[in-house]
Amino acid sequence: MKNIKITVLLLCGMVLLPGCSLPDGNRGLAELPPAASAYTQRFDSDSGEALIDYNGRTYSFFGTIRNKMSNSSARECIGYLENDENTHLYTLSEDPLDNYIMMKNTTGFMEQATFYRATDTKQKDIFTPEYIESLGYECWGSSGIHYEEAEACIGIICEAPDIREILYTAESDGKFIAKGGTRYANCKELKRGDLFMIEIIEERLKDKVDTSGPFNVTMQFKVITVDGEEKEVNGVFTHDMMLGGYLRGLEIRYDENSGYYLYLNY
Image 1 (cartoon, one colour):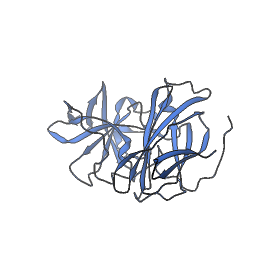
Image 2: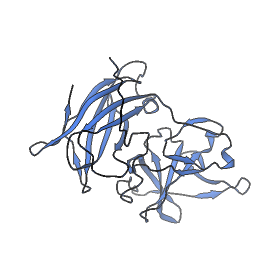
Image 3: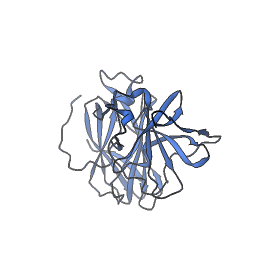
Image 4: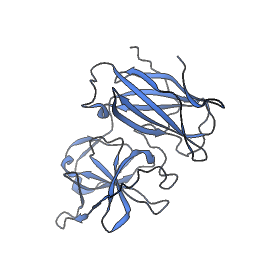
């Protein structure tokens, strides 16, 4: 498979780059599940750390948002903070190993999210979504933050009006590998002809596909209109990809009969 290299002037809302920081308040955040679990935030009097236990691991307060992130980056709402059902805890779409969890109060429009990091990653250089800003707490010492990951990149061009955000889910041989969204940081309508990048990182593929060679990627799309409506995009994109590969030619178009639909321009 031939890899194409191209200079991209506009990279908005990548999987690993900041999207829009909770632009519509809490719209689009994963919902609190029925019979949700309550989690206790406790404080270690010796170290001064704020701690939360989840799924057999202990998490310590680590940092906050660097600039912006997309609501779609909150993969799953795992529960709420004890004695405060409006403060929810989330896992992250870009963090498949759950090295981080996010905490956010959902009652306020501008409430800032905070992040907790698994304490078993101390002194380790781990992958960290770029929207997480370390606040440099002493308890973390020299624990590394690693952003570079091998990825397969898919370029998608907006050729339709009235779109504010493009949402996607990706599978490989029937196994879920990624979901996310792409849009401008200012949340304005996407300009026709603009190119956006979707990155499927290596971490999402571990134990699911053989990454030593080509692997199949199947993607389905939705769009969020400028009025906030969610619309299906007709058509399914499927193609063989490789880590380090780049594919361009996918477009989202619109007509009155078909609505929003995928078009392969290659």
